[in-house]
Length: 352
Image 1: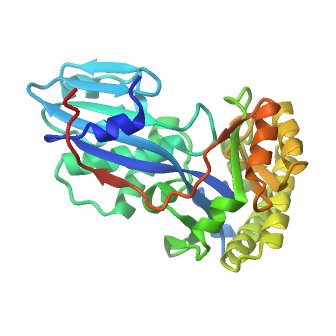
Image 2: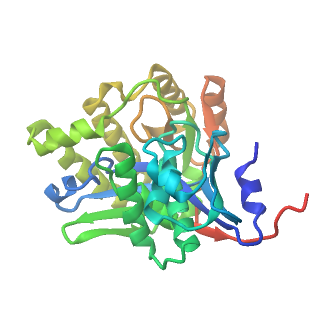
Image 3: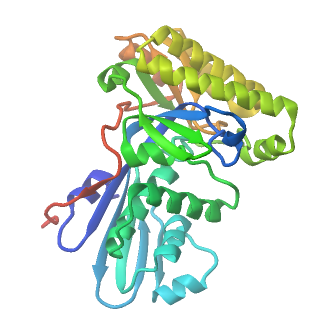
C-alpha cells in the first residue's frame, strides 16, 4: 500500500499535491455550528493541529476519464467523464466526488487521497482532507480562491455530504496549523493563533487511539435542535462550553498549565454529563491508566464512542504514559503540533 510520504514524494510533471493536518479539540466543540454561537457572546473553539496528515494528489491524463482512488482505504471509482460523475447520486468515494461536483474540472485525471488518521479517530480527518482536496482542485481548475473561501466551500460541501449542519472549527487547523482559537462572532468567524510555545505543547500532550467507534457519541444534530428549541439545560450547557473555551485560550496563552488541567477536566465532565455514552469501557480504562502514570487530565476527541483521547501529561512522562496505554490495549499516536496548515508540494517523480 502506498504511504502518504510516498505519495507526496512521487510528485512530478503536472501533478498537484497538497497535505493538510488533522486536529485535536481542546474546548468549544459543537458551539461552532451556526447559529448556536450567536446566542453566546464571546464564543470560540480551541484546537491543536496535529502532525497527522491528509493528502490529495491530482494527476492529469489524456482523455476524459476520471479516476478516484483512496490509498488508505483501498477504494477506487472510475467515471468515463465528468458528465457521468455528475449524473450519479451515490458514490464509493463521496468526499472527492462531491468536491468534483462543485469544481467541475475539465479533462481526464486521477485524483488520489490519503489519510494518516485511523478510522473513526475523532480528529477531523475528513475536514482536513476536504481542505487538502479543495485547495488542490482550486489550483487544478485555475481558480484564485483565498483560504477562507476554501473553508466556506469545504464546510458547505461537507454539509451536503452528511446532510446535517456542520461546524467551522475543524477546518482551521488544516488551514493554518499551530494552536487555534476560532472566534465565533456576529460579524463573522476568524482565527487567532494562540501564542503558546509549540515545543512545549509537544512535551505536554499525549494522543492515543482506542479503535473505531462502536456507538454514536454526542449527536450534534439532536443537541443542535434542542438548543434551537430553547431547552434550558442545553442552553446553559452551551454557556458553560463557551466559558471553558474562553478560559482555555487565556490559560494556554499564559502557559498556566494548572488551569489548563482544570479546564480539560471541566470540559470532559460537562461532555460526559451531556452524553453518558461518549466513553466506551476501554476509553474509561485507558484514561484511568494514563492518569495513574503521569497524565494530569484527559478528554475524548470528537464525538466519542471510540476514537482518540488527548491527555495533558507531566513533562518528562511521555514514555511511561504511552507504555502504560500500549500495555492496556490502546495505540499511542505520534503527538506533535503541525507547524503549517495546507501545503503544496513539488518534487521529482519516482523513477523506480
